[in-house]
Image (tube, rainbow, N blue to C red; front, side, top):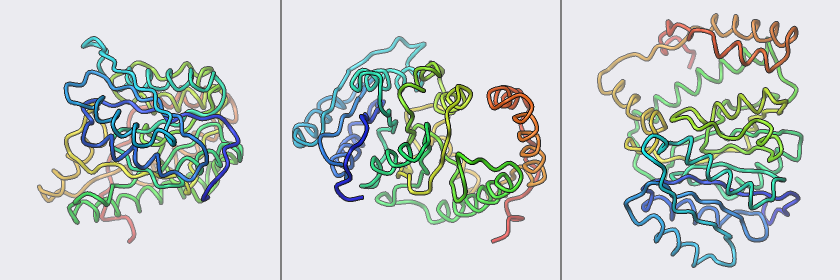
Length: 310
């Protein structure tokens, strides 16, 4: 996708809090994208006490002909100083930059997207998707415990098997196989008109990215997880967002250190869930299905990971 032409307006939207160390990595990766022209970036630096603003400004100055970065130094009150507020503000900035029409592409300050990341997102939108989730991988530029990499590979096998079950029982023409299953704030593109119809990012402390996707699908959006769309995320265990990637890394490290066997919902639960989704959607539509699914109790984690075929 080298030198890919831009067919739609877009803006990369980034919340950042105390990210002076990681922002240069992200901004350099954005400057190296294959799309032509200047790349619009909406950067909401919030509640920071490091030099995130100064560091970002210096990087942007080096790439003034390539990056069109709007930086807002925001201080939210304590009750609102969380991921939902920060991501919502970054997306609002992006929406203003593209004048309400085009594509908003969310990412996080600790990401390092590959060079064709923007082009791959825009290609997926052009192919008919309204919401595009990007697969997340640990950033191999950082030291990562081999045991964590091995455990993540085993978990990837489990989730690939879950997707195969879903594709067999409740396939989606909007999201055909092969596909991944990630749609997080690390890589999430959404049509701007749909974004507004869905109500934007909900101002909740955690899970704001998943809530946005659910609202977008309920509003009629077509969700896709093309394998060509992916990004790298930091493997750090001390993050900025509650219950974010860093928390997941800490949990995974504790499981490995304590020698515990991870347990996950058995595949029969996923078979029943896929059949349930198909039936509810056929009768009441996608919005009703999603609302009903949110009210279901969690599946029991009753299958050891070792039962997943290698």
